[in-house]
Length: 48
Picture 1 (tube, rainbow, N blue to C red):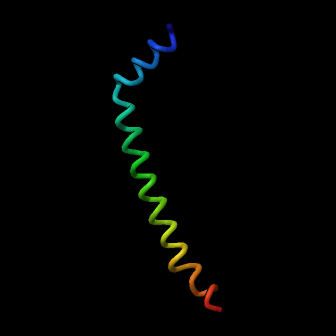
Picture 2: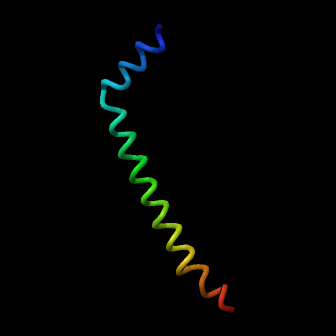
Picture 3: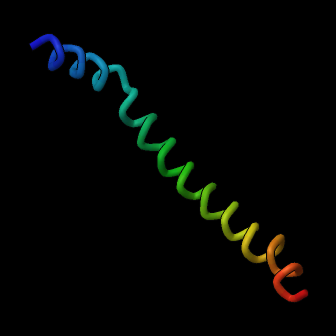
């Protein structure tokens, strides 16, 4: 029962929406970095 009460307190403080936004931003940033590495950094060595 204590775990459920703690989770309710965590969810009601507004941390859940902050976590969701962080996950979305992190996923987008990961795709940008992956594209940068594959298209710009690894292309010249691949051509050689």
